Every structure is written in structure tokens, then in C-alpha cells.
Image (cartoon, one colour):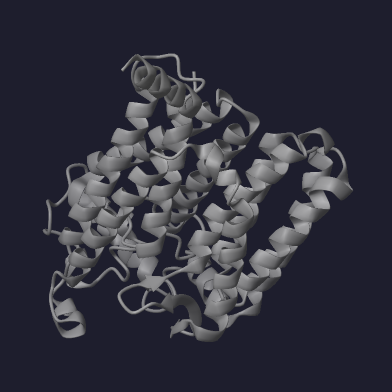
Length: 382
């Protein structure tokens, strides 16, 4: 018996070598609670945004709710898997994970399901897979491992900046071919944020930032539908029935909610007035039916995850864990920012989902897996 106890203590010490506290920290509990509450909010909003129009499209008014509930269940399993697995083990599979993501990006160009002129999903029968979302997780894990291995050569442009630039160019190029400029921009921004957190000199980051911004501006103006979004952003009143219809209806929902909201299923989003209400514009549904109070509560929960994530990056047990936590936190921050500024008409809409709340299958599951990684690092931090 004493031998078994000693063996268990040894394994526990190997699994969590930097954990001195007898139980989970308040930072860990706050992050976990915020994630679960946001997922619950997403399920409620998916139910509240169910509309009679879905009967003719999908055979039932609550089909969207059923799909979202299934995705949330899978997301919770993904979170439990990653939170129970030592984050250091992920660096061993980082090359394989990145290779699988690249393969998925290539396959979707040839065999992807075409919707609205884009190919972003692989139809696997029971569900659709979006490789660009998996690529975000693969990038964060792989780049954290790469920057950790070369942490003594961060000022060498040939050892760090150029290899990262080539890799990001390949990944973003494949995503843009779908086309999905928003996901490509977030991917490049995550890489820049992680390189900054690692200590890469600003002059090297500028060599990546300037061409990236120039390329993004050119690509935004090159496609008619992207130009339409930009025109709708600058002249929403004149195009309220065209390019600016979605954002106009989203703002109408937010203003209709007022301070306390209209109540669940009492707004006009569930009647189909807000396009993609459970997905890109779920924050408009929250603002309408839960009011300013509910919208601020969602923002507080998101801010809790992001801020505790950055704090975890500061006190992580090792460099790899620090960069991994920083990358995931930057990822969540960018998605929240891009989604909210689109809904509030502060920038053109991009179709980026709101983490843990929007009804995006692959996005929700991958975000949950990334959150589990972040929780695992927080659990092992002092």
C-alpha cells in the first residue's frame, strides 16, 4: 500500500510540478465558471432566436437549437479532455497537428461544401468541419513550441521572423483562397501577438505588419462582396436594404432591448429579421432580449476569460506554457473584438463568431478545447 501511495504521489508531482496549492485557484475557477456560463447563454440565445422560418428550411423551428446544444455538448467533452491532459504533451504533436490543419485547408479547396460562393466546410456526413478554425489551435500550439525552442535567437531575422512569415503566408494564402479574409487576418494577428509576447524585436514585427496590412487592404477591395460590406459600413443609411441590411437590423435589435431587454423570445430576432442571428450576430440577440444588463454581463464574462488568460501567461510554469496561454488569450481577444465592432458598426462585418456563445460547430468545439488548454496551464501555475 505504501508503495502504491508513493507511486501516486510521484505521478501527481510529475503531472503538476508547479502546483503548490491544495485546490484550484480563484483564477482557475473564475475562468471555468465564465466559460460554462457563456456556453449556457449561447444555448439559451439559440433557443430564443429559433424562428418559424426554420420550419420550411430545416423541418422544425428548434432545429438550430438542437444543433447548437449538440455542439455545446461536444465542446464540453473537448474542454474536459484538454483540461485533464498536461499541456506540455501538446508540443510533441504540434508538427502533426499543423500538418493535419494544412491538409484540411487543401482538401476544403477541392472537396469543400460550397455556400454563397465560398468553400469553408468539409462535409463529413453527420457534421461539417471547418479547417480554418482547427488551424488557429494548430498555429498557437506550433508557434509556442517553435518560439520556445528558439528563444535565444529571437533577434535573428533568419532564425525566427522569416520562417514564421513563410509559414503564416502559406496558411493565410490557403484560407484566403476559400475565401475567408477575416479568419486569415485573425490568424496573422495571433502570430504577431505571440511573437511580441516572446520578445521578438519591434522592427522585425514591422516587417510583417506593413505587408500584411497592405495585402489585407488590397484583398478587401479586390472582391465585390467585400467592397459592398465596406460601402455598407460607410453609408449604412443609403444601403439599409442592401449591403448594410444585416448590421442595420442588428443595431435595431440592440436599441429595441433598452436597459432591461424585451425578455426571452420577445424580440424580433426570432422572426428572422436579423440574418445569422444565432451565429455572427448573437450579441444583437443578447442585447435585445436581455438588454444592456445582459450584454454587459456577457462582456464581463468574456473579459474575465481573457484577463485571467493573460495573467496565466505571466505566471505559467515554463516558456512554452506562457506562450501558449498568451496565444490563446490573444486569439479570444481578437475574436471578441472583431465580432463586437462588426455588430456595433464600428468596422465592417467579417463573419467572425463570438467565442462560446455563437452557434458555430467547429468554432465552438475548438474554442472549448483551447479554453481547456488555458485552464490546464492555470491549474499548474503558482
